[in-house]
Image (cartoon, rainbow, N blue to C red):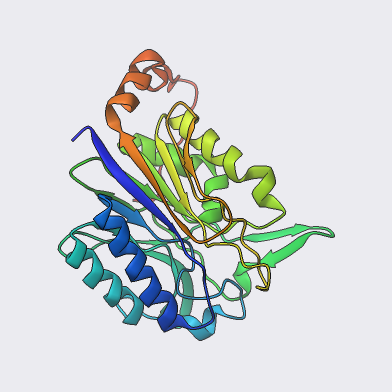
Length: 276
């Protein structure tokens, strides 16, 4: 199929995990009813975002939250990118995205490989590494439409990750993310458009809705960008479902018109994967 519909769920996150999961599932059902074949939740969809929350809300995978995602993916017969949750495994915590297929099978699991440790004086300081460990592997999954590559939030700043995914045949990159009110207005859309144009892929980002009363205030603005760098769909700051039709014929045309993959000087430079 050359075209398919994607949905991004910009969920309002509360402090009650079960409510977050229940409401996420109801939005997933609505998106599927509107024809979405691939649906993504936002980063940290079952928990408030913050280092003090990660240990309290962390789960195993499979576990309570991901079991619900598996069930709703099967019920709706969709590919479900489960945003991310705090994952506990062998005494360590990770920021992890689980992906489920139309039969409810766990297709992929991606642990955020670049931890969000930043310090912008007078604006924001955040250290994910206070409680989280970094993942160490790439993650893609195949659908009848295209191959999809996964990143989480801060990963979007690292162009090499997107390049590796493009080399591995991905035509859609999905980054559940929660940029903030400092980096969001400056870089959220810019980074998505950059990764899309650099690699001639579709890029989709799913953010939580903005909650001005939260200890960490998300920027919102879940977005879909095409390989030409055009913003196809974009949410505001409130809870919403963003829909976009992904046209792989358009992607093929752009790659034919501007054949950067064929023109790369592999005799002079390379971005290579050190670990599968």
